Image 1: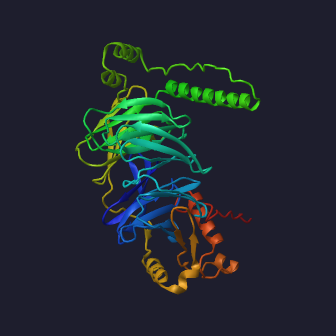
Image 2: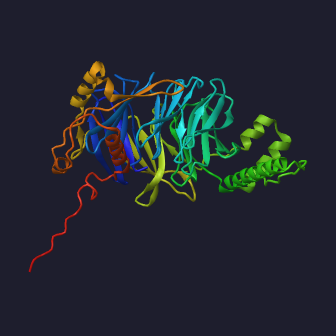
Length: 462
C-alpha cells in the first residue's frame, strides 16, 4: 500500500506515499466524464475507469504514456472492478466476468448469480474470487479464477454480507455482515472459521476491511468514529491449516481404498483444538460454555480489538491500510473529506494509535502528469456510432452475455523509433494491445525509468 487514488467532482488524482511526511501527486485528470469507479493495478501504470456517462463501459489507460488501451462494454452497469497481475474481474448485478489481464480476453463468466446490487466481491493475489450467493443470508462462494473452478460455499453470517477481504497469501478470508458487529476470518482451504472478532454492539456499515501487508493484522473502519485493528492468531491459523491437510489426506486414503475394493475402515482424524490467545480467553471460554446461555458465551469467546484509532468525526467513510512506510509500520486512514491521516502503530503492545501527520489531498499539486483524453473519447464515440467501425470490434461470446471490446484509435507516434519500425496509424491489433497492456502492467512507479530512457555512458577522451 504505497499509492492512493482520490476521486472528486473536480478530478481524479493518484498519489505516491513516499514517506510519513511526503505524499507526491503523480497523475491528475479532470473529471469531465463523471468518473465513478477508478482502480489502479498496484504500482503499475495501468488504470481502469468507469464513468457515469457510460456505466457499462470499462476504460483501460496507460496513465504514464497518456494512452487509451481498450474499452470493454458489458450488458449492464459495472458495479465493481478487481484485478491482480493475472486476472481482471468485472462484477455486474447478476453476473461476473473474468478476463486475462494480459490481453483482456474473457476466460469465463459466472451467470445467474444472486442479485448483488452492491457489487461486493474480493480477489486474492493468487486469483481466488469470493462473492455472495444469497440475499437473505451471509453466504459466499469461492471461485478459483486462475484454474476456472468453482470452490466451496461458506455460511459466514446470518445476515447479508457487507465486506470481504483476502489476506495477502490468499489463505484467509475476512467477512462482515450488514450488522457490522462481528467480523469473522475463515480458512480458504476448508472453509473452517479461524477467528471471530467483536467490533461492537451497535449496528454499523463496514466501509473498509483489509489485512496488513504481512497478514498478521486486520483493519476495519465503519461510519463510527473508531477504527479497529485486530490481531490474527498465528497458532489458530496453523491449527486449521493442519486440519485441512489431514482432511485432504483422509479423503485421498479413502479414495485409494475404494478404488482397491477394500472395505473402508473407520478412522478418526485427531485435530488439535484451536488455541486461544491467552489464559484469560481460555478461562472465559470454559466458564461461558458451562454456565452461560449460548448467545452470551459466544460474545465472551470473541476476540476484541488489538489497537484502535479515534477519529475526529463520525459519519464519514474512511478507507484504512496497515503498511510499512520507510520501514516503519504505519496505519493509514483516507477520509472522504479529502484528508489522509498517518498514525503510529505498535505491533507489540497495540492500544491507541498516535496521530503522526495529516495530508490535505483536496487541491492540485505541482509537477504532475495531466491527462487529456477528450479527442480520443470523441473519436471513440464517433466510431461506436458508425457502422464502418464494426470490423474493428471483437465480440466475445459467453454463457452470461456478450462483452464488446473496442480498440480506440491510436495516437500517431512520430518518434524516431516508430519511424524505424514502420508503424502505421491504423486500428490497434491484438498484438499491439497485448504489448501496451504488458507495458502498463510491468511499468515501475517512477515517471521516467531506465527501461524507457537507458543511461548513456560516454567515455572521456584523452
